[in-house]
Image (cartoon, rainbow, N blue to C red; front, side, top):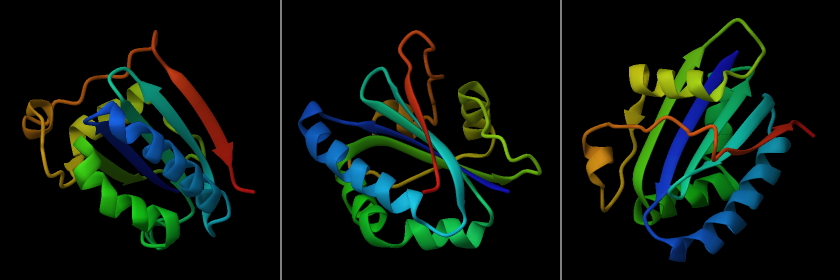
Length: 143
Protein backbone atom coordinates (compact mmCIF):
# COMPACT_ATOMS: atom_id res chain seq x y z
CA UNK A 1 0.00 0.00 0.00
CA UNK A 2 1.12 3.55 -0.71
CA UNK A 3 0.52 6.27 1.91
CA UNK A 4 0.40 10.00 1.17
CA UNK A 5 0.38 12.70 3.88
CA UNK A 6 -0.14 16.40 3.28
CA UNK A 7 -0.03 19.27 5.74
CA UNK A 8 -1.10 22.76 4.66
CA UNK A 9 -1.49 25.98 6.58
CA UNK A 10 -3.56 28.76 5.03
CA UNK A 11 -1.90 32.13 5.45
CA UNK A 12 -5.19 34.02 5.75
CA UNK A 13 -8.77 33.41 6.77
CA UNK A 14 -9.71 35.15 3.51
CA UNK A 15 -8.70 32.00 1.58
CA UNK A 16 -10.79 29.65 3.72
CA UNK A 17 -14.13 29.76 1.81
CA UNK A 18 -12.52 29.08 -1.57
CA UNK A 19 -10.24 26.44 -0.02
CA UNK A 20 -13.20 24.60 1.53
CA UNK A 21 -15.16 24.62 -1.73
CA UNK A 22 -12.20 23.30 -3.68
CA UNK A 23 -11.54 20.73 -0.95
CA UNK A 24 -15.07 19.35 -1.42
CA UNK A 25 -14.42 18.96 -5.14
CA UNK A 26 -11.12 17.21 -4.38
CA UNK A 27 -12.87 14.80 -1.99
CA UNK A 28 -15.44 13.95 -4.66
CA UNK A 29 -12.64 13.32 -7.16
CA UNK A 30 -10.70 11.29 -4.59
CA UNK A 31 -13.56 8.94 -3.72
CA UNK A 32 -13.97 7.93 -7.36
CA UNK A 33 -10.26 7.68 -8.19
CA UNK A 34 -8.92 4.26 -9.24
CA UNK A 35 -6.62 2.83 -6.59
CA UNK A 36 -7.90 4.97 -3.72
CA UNK A 37 -8.58 2.79 -0.66
CA UNK A 38 -9.35 5.16 2.24
CA UNK A 39 -8.35 8.47 3.72
CA UNK A 40 -8.72 10.97 6.49
CA UNK A 41 -8.75 14.72 6.91
CA UNK A 42 -7.95 16.81 9.96
CA UNK A 43 -8.59 20.48 10.68
CA UNK A 44 -6.13 21.62 13.32
CA UNK A 45 -5.42 24.93 15.05
CA UNK A 46 -4.26 27.92 13.06
CA UNK A 47 -5.92 27.10 9.72
CA UNK A 48 -3.81 23.94 9.44
CA UNK A 49 -5.16 21.04 7.38
CA UNK A 50 -3.82 17.49 7.27
CA UNK A 51 -4.76 14.69 4.89
CA UNK A 52 -3.75 11.05 4.86
CA UNK A 53 -4.66 8.79 1.95
CA UNK A 54 -4.03 5.13 1.26
CA UNK A 55 -3.59 3.88 -2.30
CA UNK A 56 -2.98 0.57 -4.00
CA UNK A 57 0.00 2.14 -5.80
CA UNK A 58 2.03 5.32 -6.15
CA UNK A 59 1.10 5.50 -9.84
CA UNK A 60 -2.60 5.76 -9.02
CA UNK A 61 -1.98 8.46 -6.41
CA UNK A 62 -0.01 10.45 -8.99
CA UNK A 63 -2.84 10.10 -11.51
CA UNK A 64 -5.24 11.60 -8.96
CA UNK A 65 -2.78 14.34 -8.00
CA UNK A 66 -2.35 15.56 -11.56
CA UNK A 67 -6.01 15.65 -12.59
CA UNK A 68 -9.14 17.74 -12.22
CA UNK A 69 -9.86 19.53 -8.92
CA UNK A 70 -6.66 18.41 -7.23
CA UNK A 71 -4.53 19.76 -10.07
CA UNK A 72 -6.41 23.07 -9.78
CA UNK A 73 -5.79 23.12 -6.02
CA UNK A 74 -2.07 22.53 -6.44
CA UNK A 75 -1.83 25.62 -8.64
CA UNK A 76 -3.54 27.81 -5.99
CA UNK A 77 -1.89 26.49 -2.84
CA UNK A 78 1.45 28.31 -3.28
CA UNK A 79 -0.47 31.59 -3.01
CA UNK A 80 -2.92 30.47 -0.34
CA UNK A 81 -0.49 28.71 2.02
CA UNK A 82 2.51 29.79 4.06
CA UNK A 83 3.33 26.22 5.12
CA UNK A 84 3.03 23.08 2.99
CA UNK A 85 4.68 19.69 3.23
CA UNK A 86 4.15 16.13 2.02
CA UNK A 87 5.40 12.67 2.89
CA UNK A 88 4.98 9.35 1.10
CA UNK A 89 5.88 5.78 1.98
CA UNK A 90 5.06 2.17 1.27
CA UNK A 91 3.58 -0.09 3.93
CA UNK A 92 2.20 -3.62 4.10
CA UNK A 93 -0.78 -2.73 6.31
CA UNK A 94 -4.06 -1.49 4.91
CA UNK A 95 -4.74 0.70 7.96
CA UNK A 96 -4.26 4.45 7.90
CA UNK A 97 -1.53 5.79 10.17
CA UNK A 98 -2.66 7.70 13.26
CA UNK A 99 -2.27 11.48 13.22
CA UNK A 100 0.72 11.31 15.60
CA UNK A 101 2.30 8.71 13.29
CA UNK A 102 1.61 10.94 10.27
CA UNK A 103 3.30 13.81 12.11
CA UNK A 104 6.33 11.63 12.92
CA UNK A 105 6.66 10.47 9.30
CA UNK A 106 6.33 14.04 8.03
CA UNK A 107 9.19 15.10 10.29
CA UNK A 108 11.35 12.12 9.32
CA UNK A 109 10.80 11.89 5.57
CA UNK A 110 8.64 14.83 4.53
CA UNK A 111 9.55 17.41 1.96
CA UNK A 112 8.46 21.00 1.62
CA UNK A 113 6.12 22.11 -1.12
CA UNK A 114 6.66 25.48 -2.75
CA UNK A 115 4.80 28.42 -1.23
CA UNK A 116 5.09 32.04 -2.37
CA UNK A 117 5.22 33.54 1.14
CA UNK A 118 6.81 30.95 3.43
CA UNK A 119 6.42 31.40 7.16
CA UNK A 120 9.24 30.82 9.65
CA UNK A 121 8.00 27.32 10.49
CA UNK A 122 7.96 26.37 6.82
CA UNK A 123 11.50 27.59 6.26
CA UNK A 124 12.73 25.87 9.44
CA UNK A 125 10.79 22.64 8.64
CA UNK A 126 8.94 22.82 11.96
CA UNK A 127 5.67 20.91 11.74
CA UNK A 128 3.67 21.27 14.92
CA UNK A 129 2.03 18.04 16.03
CA UNK A 130 -1.74 18.14 15.72
CA UNK A 131 -3.35 19.00 19.03
CA UNK A 132 -5.78 16.24 20.02
CA UNK A 133 -7.85 18.87 21.85
CA UNK A 134 -8.47 20.75 18.60
CA UNK A 135 -8.93 17.86 16.18
CA UNK A 136 -11.87 17.96 13.84
CA UNK A 137 -11.23 14.80 11.92
CA UNK A 138 -13.20 12.94 9.30
CA UNK A 139 -12.56 9.77 7.35
CA UNK A 140 -13.69 8.61 3.94
CA UNK A 141 -13.52 5.58 1.67
CA UNK A 142 -13.77 4.94 -2.03
CA UNK A 143 -17.27 5.22 -3.49
